[in-house]
Amino acid sequence: MKMIIAVIKPHRLDQVRDALTEIGVHGLTVSEVRGYGRQGGHTEIYRGAEYQVNFVPKLKLELAVPDDLSERVVEAIRSAANNDQIGDGKIFVADLEQVMRIRTGETGDEAL
Amino acid sequence: MIYRHLSGATVAVALSLLSFPSFAAETALSGGDTAWILTSTALVLFMTLPGLAMFYGGLVRSNNVLSVLMHCFAIACLASIIWVVGGYALAFGDGGGAQAWIGGTEKWFLLGIGPDALSGSIPEILFVAFQMTFAIITPALIVGAYVERIKFSAVMMFSGLWLIFVYAPVCHWVWGGGWLADLGVMDFAGGIVVHVTAGSSALLLAKMLGGRRGFPKELRPPHNPGMTMIGAAMLWVGWFGFNAGSALAADGSASMAMMVTHISAATASITWAFLEWRRYGKASLVGIVTGMVAGLATITPASGFVGPVGALFIGLSAGIVCHFAVEWVKQKIQIDDSLDVFAVHGVGGALGTLLTAVFATASLGGMGLAEGTTMGSQFGVQVIGVVAVLAWSLVISFIIIKITSATMGLRITDEAEIEGLDLGSHGERGYDI
Image (cartoon, rainbow over all chains, first blue to last red; front, side):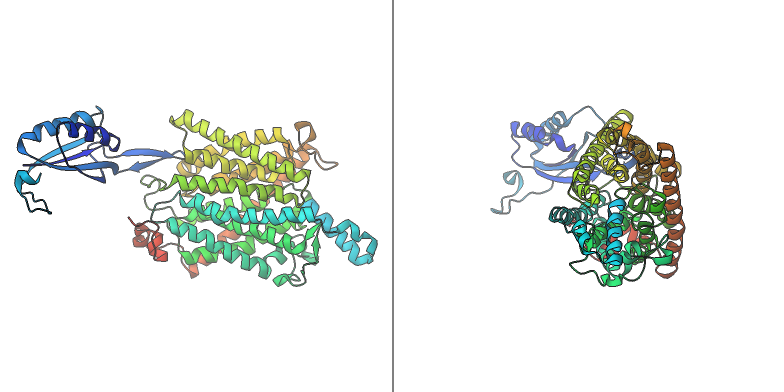
């Protein structure tokens, strides 16, 4: 199993969700986060003065998927979240040791 | 305002000297005038609470929002008490031999001002209340200069002393029958009395206090421009009471003042937004509402004297001049007058006071200058008014700031500044995040 964590631009959430539903992903956790990458935030102008915004608002998606679905999920997120611009985000994939559904106690792929 | 108030006072003096009852009809109470000034008094208080408080509150960081609301609220309470105790007497009382410079002490604690006492065609106690709301908003305007880093005790001490030693005398000079009134200075609703005093003192206090941490390069943007717009909109509405109420009557002068006030606000707003759009590519909400305040401050001294065409020009020049003044203060001379009190109020108030001499002339659609005055001579008087009040405000404010600094201390600790004044000074938070 894989744990996939994606940081994306907030306005792309709906497209990403649709793309994931299409390939059979049934669950997703989203949180509002702030951060910076290579461009180091951005500037905003108020009353003629530039303000440095060091931490840009993003959404963090977390989802656990079976090994065989992992690559398609990554590709689906990438194509749905891609604006071809700096700040579109990143996708992280990590091995996932165990999963358990709290209600039934099922584990492994059964629990996904 | 001054002409009306004086004529009322003159008649009252004549009455008391001659005890000639048949004159009583001329100074009878007008129900219409009284109703309008009662309304205006509420409108002007509404400008500070919550208008100005929200306007300023939205412009600071999220961990300082309560401190700004607190400053405005506490100043409103303090100024009210000072006004009742001695402020009104110093500003509008009879100063006897010192009348040119300061009022007297006979009306301390508003003694002798019963419900039957009149000021012109309205109860004097209503005039006291109306003027009290001006005494509230003027020190509250200065809040914008020192947000996010000042001690609360310093705010209270500075504001109290400032009201007594800067505002009350200047108010007396211009509206209480002092030397600037004798000179014929035209300040309908407070371009000099309110905006030049507050703006210039704000700049000095910001300079002596020092900038916010990170000024000018690493500042955080306004946390809630929406709140700022709501506060600005309340200011706009409240300003109808401020300017049209300054006619001290429910008449054509008040109606014209309300209209030109509105025109100037709208024109300055659009001008500011247009400049931002041309210079930075985007017209911002914070920008358009700042233009609105500039337009309102600038029309204030002119509001009872100019016509709609004058208002268009005054609004246009307010939008342009104040827009560039903001950048001059922050970037060129690098004083952290944080919310641009000087650039918007000080510059706007002075600009409007000077332009009053121009657009009050009948040929430019104004209500006309006093007999025997020309545009040039009136302009000279306006310059004297602005310069004298500017100098007085700076000198006295300097002394007050030194006293406050020596007794209370001005600045909060670095730790509290980073944490924010909400928790650092008041022990509460605006947002649970």
